[in-house]
Image (cartoon, rainbow, N blue to C red; front, side, top):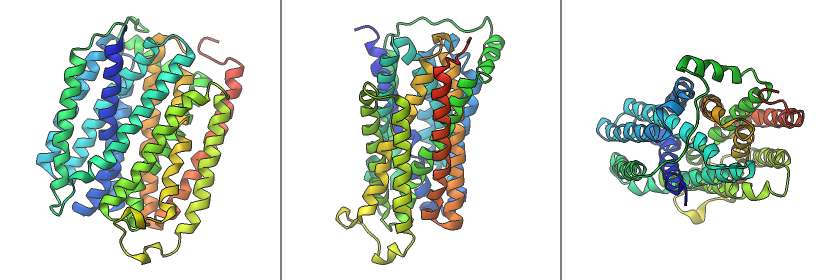
Length: 410
């Protein structure tokens, strides 16, 4: 089957980076525990992950078609391989920053390549939405695995958890070899005659009203998603008083619900308008927070440390299920805007999406981290209701502008 090799490589690379990229919540919890840093100090790891994603995406998005998507992904795997090795031998909070810096740079290359290749490997908007949702769903499976993979290396030795990076280096190496021998069959033209022209045309996208509204929507969504995902392991430990292993494992429910939600998103969009689906999902997500958070204001830790799944209160299971409802939003937003543009603009448009997503993740995680330290975890999560309300407004704007065909070149 044509391009089957590169499709498998895309899934494999996304799976590996799902584990790496979203281990930030786990590493934050370990940094607070092992390296004795505060919540606000630990929250800077999100910036070391997301800001390189934004910067690298801005610089190379328009140039990537010239460089080659396969070469970019191979370079990303090589960078993060050495990033994982230095984490093992560095073993300090400083080296966690270096690790997530390497992950951020590498993921920018991976995501730009993947999003651009989706447009090349599909023919219709439905095919695009289906492949986008399945890849993002597979990404969430990788995240869920991380919540079990890291605790498997926990022991009484506080440095034992670092051994997980040897295993990750092995996965990265296998992914590198598979991609190296995969055949890529595609042809896409750059959008200009030089890098300067490419950057100029890319920047012009930002003044297109529909594109601007889309990237703000992506910013708001990732602020919500990362605000929850990054801090859920610490939330579980501080609020529910789970032990370190259970705190991380219970957070896997969020990743699994995100994965399941994204897998079924492609199916649901065949029968209902994507805007209606997104609004319903946001409203239900906000409702879960409004229902659960007031019940966590009391002294829930009085029962002592919880180390067994059977002792987990029912609220501990309900909160992560919010992932089921926020899951369809991101791939649907991205697929809608990308499938509305010429394929030559998919790489620069992907760059804009990634930049604003990274900024949303950084800002959301930082704000939640600061609030976590100053007002407590339960109150900190109330902040996420603000971007939820704004997201509904911007999705309605997207729907209105789409119906008026406010697209590039209109």
